[in-house]
Image (cartoon, rainbow, N blue to C red; front, side, top):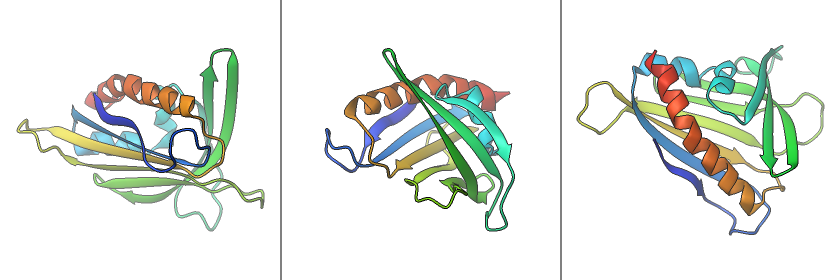
Length: 168
């Protein structure tokens, strides 16, 4: 199970500027298997329900790595919202770290989205355990306290699906 899920660091509850969320998962997997899944945004739809669609995007010359178009979907009661982001892998250190950053090509200024993952052996005595720490930074101005709860619940639900995926 994820721990520290939905932890908000930054603005006080009720403020509507930015969010930082960190979650940690320890599961039985190899570092190679974990890195293969978390370093490819194309896999995220299979374990995160908020990721409605992911497709490869043509990279630009200035992109440090591959690019994807990611559709995020959220629902609160009858209200639904979809957000499309162009994300680029900005860092990839096999079995250690990966970072994705929003890089749009329309020339407009957009809120920052940064998703990072760090992995390594867990501190637990069980051989073969991998510790994954994922952090999401959203620098936008539309974040409501109820979204914190929704994101925390999604993180919790995703832990089993991710653990099953990397154990294959």
